[in-house]
Amino acid sequence: MKHFLSLEPFDQPTLVELLDLADQMKKDRGSHSSQPLSGQTWAMIFSKSSTRTRVSFEVGIRELGGKVLFLAANEMQLGRGEPIKDTARVLGRMVHGAVIRTYDHQDVMDFAHFGNIPTINALTDHAHPCQIMADLMTIRSKLGDLSNKVITFVGDGACNVATSWIYAAMKFGFELRIASPKAFSPDASLIAQAGDKIKVIHRMDEAVAGSHVLYTDVWVSMGKEEESASRLKEFEPYQINTAIMNQALPGALLMHCLPAYRGKEVTEEILEGHADTIFEQAENRLHAQKAILSWLAVEGR
Ligand code: CP
Ligand code: NVA
Image (cartoon, rainbow, N blue to C red; front, side, top):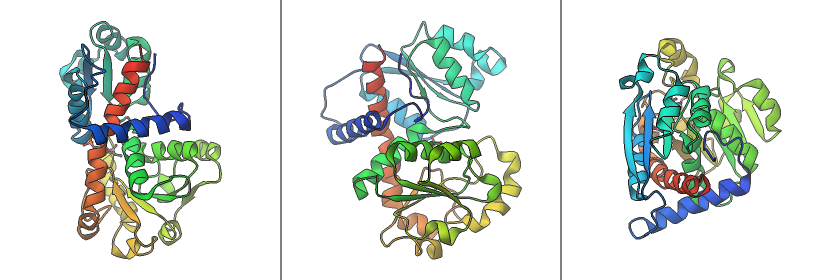
């Protein structure tokens, strides 16, 4: 049984196969007749808010011929304390696949194990692998070969998006810099395994110089709202603004997984100046999700 819970277990050829499939899905949208999810119903169980991930999966499942059931976790018995392993064993007998957004990464792993149906991580506190697939797709289409690029993630180096970027860099071999306050550095053991192409740099000028891509995310991830005041203060020097953008390579891309908080991690002017890239990145969530879904539907049985 195949799942898509993190980039960690995948090798580069498999990820490239998925990115190629995503490019194909984008090119063929509206004209392809393949319906790999025909006859299937997929459940989407979300414990956190979502716009892009929810819509791209719902539309993607339908475009691939499947039916979709959106389940807000707090309206399920899960929200009243039913264990994830029981929820998984029930749904596993009724639906053909699951897309889960939640807090604890162990919950998606347990669901995959007990549900015994293809399971996709639509974001946990630990990782956001589907996002990074759309990001890699976007960078590849704009800048070509990934392996010789310098990609700089600016913000919370310990968050889900940064962690998935670290796994992506380990697979593709590009230089990844994480520009974060010291207290928000990535997990030290992960960095120790990651090799010397992944650098944690606390000074913005050092991190940004020579970058092909600057990438940012919210300073306060979902679930961290109680830390808002201290985070907003600590992250202030890490805002992407005109002065910072000018220190990257000429023509550098600015990417943001969205939602964006203007005046916090990025200024209005810079975000709007790079809107074409950022909203194409958001659109690519749909194509990348469809690639993941169809790959699982074929491989998962
Ligand atoms: N980038 C992303 O995952 O967006 P949503 O939270 O809107 O799904
Ligand atoms: N790091 C952010 C990503 C949102 C898509 C969060 O977890 O809220």
